[in-house]
Every structure is written in structure tokens, then in C-alpha cells.
Length: 201
Image 1 (cartoon, rainbow, N blue to C red):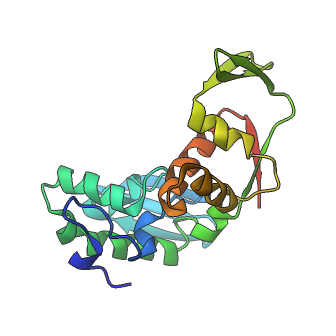
Image 2 (image 1 turned 90 degrees about the vertical axis):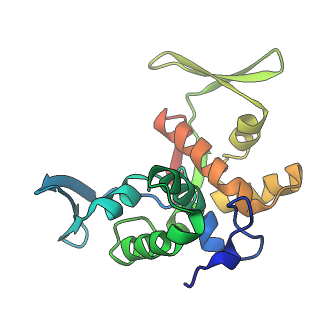
């Protein structure tokens, strides 16, 4: 998809209504293995049974595809790293991420946003000074959720997709769903890392 200066505002943000791809959070596929060879990063797709060598710039983009940054945020960070304007490097970054997608190295956006997060049964909830505290018995851990995290947690009922959750919270916080979605994905990923929720397609 073509990307140009008209996609970027004066502060390096994405213009509303233009190129929704910039708001997506590319995430490496679980079936990809990494190794090094002759200064290049080699990524091997177990699904495709194919290996690809990434040069320095492709590797920099690849390493930021962890599901917690939008395409635009990746571009901003790499722009700072390489001392390049956002609008100058954005087309190449979009092209690289689209290529990763074509090669099945990163997960399809649809596979991410249409997952159903569900709270695990073993988690106990208690309210302490207006904050929700989650207790996980084995191993013994406690997590304190702020207002936003609690709002996300409450909607992880196994009946809503991540996209449904973002649409619901967009109405609650009067904010566009596409702006909330990256933070929701990142928060739910943290829940998942701590085994507080299960995910299903």
C-alpha cells in the first residue's frame, strides 16, 4: 500500500482516516526460529520450512515486531536510531513489514484482533483502595490493576474478541478504537505472560 507524507501529520503522527495499517501492531509468529550467520540474522519459518537472511535494516525492523508497538511507533523509534525523518523511512518500513507478512513471519492482524481473551478460573479478585488486586495462588503472586487495566480485565470474559473490547472501551473513553487497540493488545499480552488469561481463536 502506498505511504507518503500525506499519511503523517506535523508531529510525526498518522493522519486520522488514512492508512489504518500504521495503527497495526506487527507481531512475530510463534513458529519462527532465529540464528546468526555471517553477520546476518537468519529467520526460519517452521510452518513454511523456509529460511530468510535479514540485513541490518530488516533486522532492526524485525526485532521491533513484538506486538506491543504500532507500525508508526516502530518508524518513530527507528527514525531516532538512524537519525532519519519519519516520512523518509516509513515507506521502506511498511514495505518490509508487508513482506514479513507475505512470508508468514509475522502473525496476520486478523489472527490477533479476533482472539478471545478469557480470565483463568484460579485468579482471585479483591478491591484495595479503589484498585483491583488479582491474586494467583500457584505460584503465589499479586497484581494491582489501574483504572484502564481493570476496564480491559473486566471485558476478558471469553465472549469478546480484542477488537470487540477496543470498540467497547472506545465508547467508554470517547477515543477512536484504533488508537486504543495497541494498548489493549499490549495489556492483554502482559496478562497472558503472567498466565492470568487464556486466549482462543
